[in-house]
Structure formats: C-alpha cells, structure tokens
Amino acid sequence: MAARRSLGIGFVGSGFITRFHIRSWAAVRGADIRGVWSPNRASAESAAALANDLDVGDARACESIAAMVEDEGIDAIWICGRNDHRVANMEEIAGAVSSGRGHLVGVACEKPLARNAAEALRMVELAREIDVLDGYLENQVFSPAVVRGRELAWERGARAAGRPYLARAAEEHSGPHNAWFWQGDLQGGGVLNDMMCHSVEAARFLLTDPDKPRSSLTPRRVNAQIHCLKWQRPEYAERLRQQYGDTVDYARRPAEDFARAMVEYEDDAGTPLVIEATTSWSYVGAGLRLSMELLGPEYSMRANSLDTDLELFFSRDLAQHSGEDLIEKQNAEMGLMPVLPNEPVAYGYDAENRHMVESFRRGERPRETFEDGLEVTRLLMAAYMSAEQGRTVGYPPEGLDEFVPAVARGEWNPGGAVRHP
Image (cartoon, rainbow, N blue to C red; front, side, top):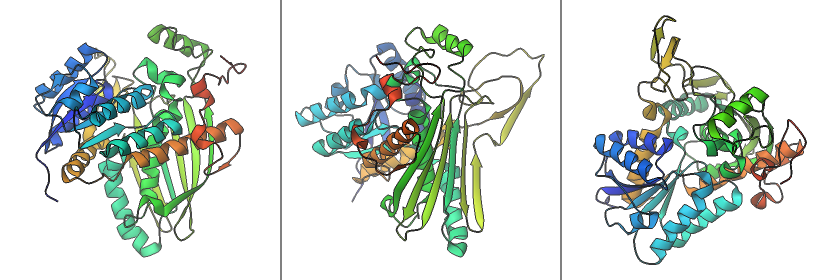
C-alpha cells in the first residue's frame, strides 16, 4: 500500500512526556506536529511553541480534543495526558469521529494504557468502534540498546545454544515530577503501575522469538511484592506535603515506592521462561537508571542507561544550579556525572515515533497496539493481586478485569492501620 501524505499530529497533554515526544520529532519524517491541547492553556501554548522552535511543525494550542479531531490538518492524535483522564480523552476522540465532525487515521496512547484492566478494555473497545489504527507508546521496546541487544542475542546466542530463558528489567529513580503521579487514585497505583509497565513489556520483548508473535508466550503465574520504603518516613512524607500540598499525604494515603514482580511464562513449545522486574521511586543515584538483562544457555546481554559515553566532573568548589540537563531525574550537580547526550534517542522515543508514523501512513497497525497495552495492564493488576494476597497467583486470576488495587482505592497504608474512606 502506498504511504499517505505527511501526517498532521495532535497531542493531548502538554507536560513532561509530551515534551519528550516533541524533542524526538526532529528524527521523525512524514509527520508534523500541528496541535496541542491541555486543560492548562498556558502549558499547551508553551508546548506548541517548543514544537515551532524546533521546526517540527506549525503547531498551535487547540481549544479542545474534539477541535483537533475536526481539524483537517490533523490526522492522528497522541494521548499523553494524565492516567485518570485516559478514557475520557478517548471518549471525546471517539465522539467527534462518530459524529462525522472529523476523521483520524490513528491514535497512539502513552503507557500505561489505563489505570486498571476495565479502563484498558474500554480504550480497546473505543478504538475498535471508530475503526482507527491504534498504537501503544512503550518506548523501551524501541530503545537502540534493547533492540540491537535482542537482535544479536537471538541471532548468535539462541541460534547456536537455544532460546533465552530469563529476562530482567529494572527502572529506578528518585520520584515523579508532578503531584498526580504520587496519588494512587489518579495514577492507578504507585511505582508498580507507573514504571513496571515499562519493565514487564521490555522483558517480554527480549524473551519473544523475533520470528513469532507476542501470543507465542503465555503468562502462567505472577508473584509480586510492594513496599513504601522511603516516602512514608515522616521527614519524607512531610517533604512531599510541602512540595505538593495536602493532596499528597503519604502519612495516611501512600502509594508504593518499590515493587518487584516475577512473571512465569511458557513458550509455544512448553518451555518455562521467567521475567524479573524491579521498579523504584526510592533510588538515589545520578538520575534515572534503566537496566535490562537477557540470559540464555551459553550467552547473556546487559544494558544500563547510566553506562554512558560521556561523563563530566564538577568539583565541590564550583557553584552549580539544580536541573535535569545532564540526565532525567538528575539528583546531583557535583562529582563525576554521567551524561546522556540525546535522551530521546537512548530511551527509544525517536524510533518509537518513527515506527508509529510509518505504520499510520501505510495503513498498518504498529507492532505495539492497544491490545498489548491491555495485556500489560492485566499483568500489572495480577501483580497487585499477588502483593495484596501475599501469594503467587495463576494467570489470569479470577476477577482480574474488575480488580482495582487497594493503593488506587486509598486503602493501603503499610505504616499504619488500613484506611477505609
């Protein structure tokens, strides 16, 4: 099929992640950023200005999501707003398309697809109802280190010695940027929902035979634990309250800042496979640390985002200002500091957005779809169920699609009695 003309892209949301996407757009061909909508008009105008300054489109702040759908210059929308607004954003898109006021080729949605399985199912249903191409924006499966490492491990290792059997993935940093991330009801949980969506999908991607579909791996069991190790300590709970106000109350309504999970799979030959995922908002280091490992019978691969090509040293006598110009979630400005010269490339945003645009232009579903986002969400909910029950759960456990974690209900408080609203 011949590719469509250059696509116009509209963004729902104008915060941190939208700006990461905008910065990556310099490496994307066949699409221009045309619009940004946010409930915060000033923020939308700022994000649109960034796109214009980077010369990646003639962007403007839009009055509504529906207005972007109705705009003849916008062909696809990237949903990058808050988790608790995902379904409402998609419903507004679907309403505008269904009414005939506009037409879209595709919709792409940031991770996680939703706060729980019921909401993720609704996202899938809405995409089907309006018959649009759907893309799940999981950047880590497009990271150059992950993609190339997987390619070589399978070509050289698996071909000679047999398929890999264990994948490890971890994402760790010192905590989110905005208040809503810390609130279990708005975000859908804590660090497990926020970041393990990356880790379980990156690890699954590494374990999947490149010549076979995702369905060649079947989840069998999930075991997980969650904890609030740092941010419920009185001094840190007070720090959050001072920074974000009374809506972030980790003394009474914490979310987990550490989570680990083990997902047991079988491949289509019945071979047992294991994923180990670890995520943390209580990591203190240079900044965001992403690490992946893949182990096979006679080989292994390893990637770590803090093993950078560039380092800077600043002595204690050099006056510095706080910022994140060296690395995301930067925690220091002194000493020997790793630097990522181009974070959107290293984290996979450039390749992810190129793939989504190319797929939409050709009329093809991307290799990460809303259905993949639904499967990830279900795995995360099974992990919460395991943590709450203190046992390994078979997959899929009964009641999975109706389950809402205690953290998201405001009923989880490891530092005190369980709090019921």
